[in-house]
Length: 254
Image 1 (cartoon, rainbow, N blue to C red):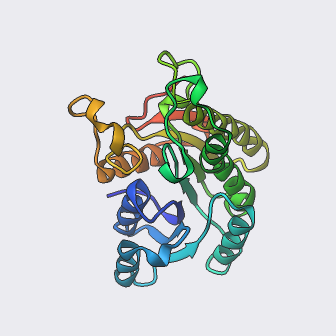
Image 2 (cartoon, rainbow, N blue to C red):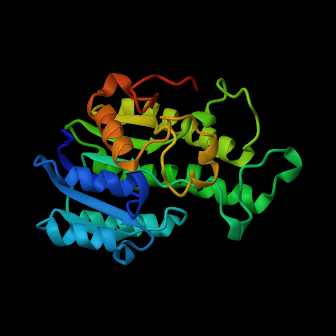
Image 3 (cartoon, one colour):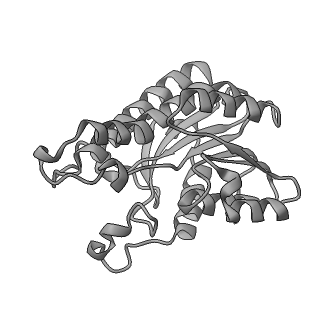
């Protein structure tokens, strides 16, 4: 059981790690309110079932993380439920999408402007705009956090294999945003810690086409990853703000 407390918002909550986090946060008696967002949270049977058992502690709010107006409307709806948040976790990410021709490129000739834009909109722009619209709700005297799921392949220093241009570059951009936001938060919201988190290879739709190459014991369940990442967040403080940490609380080079 997580030792989180207060009001927590999960972006990308309809499935995968986000959904597992919602489930585990609701198990904590110290979590007063969980706000679950996705493009269509009411269309998620899992979320609506959880809401039915949550005794008013789970609120579903629609939000398209690629749309600035949608994020602004979500923030305004959240203000109708609470005047502050104790945490925001960005979980949505995109690596492949057949409809948009998006996939992990192996060669530079495979780069496509539309695929690049789609990757950056979800992986980089989304967390940036979340920071923009939810900063005011996180800016108070209580300890608070803003965390985004990144990926080790977004590390420039750790890039020894190449490939995956769109995904690597969009995650590197997300990491730069995280670090820059942390610098500003240190001046304007001194109780807020801003973190980039690597979940490891998780059994989700994002990793599904690539799981056959994962070493035995290194493909994690969403429940395991959610528990580990919530524990990492809970065991950080403002001195860790601006860090890039993996699921085992180990630092990753930028």
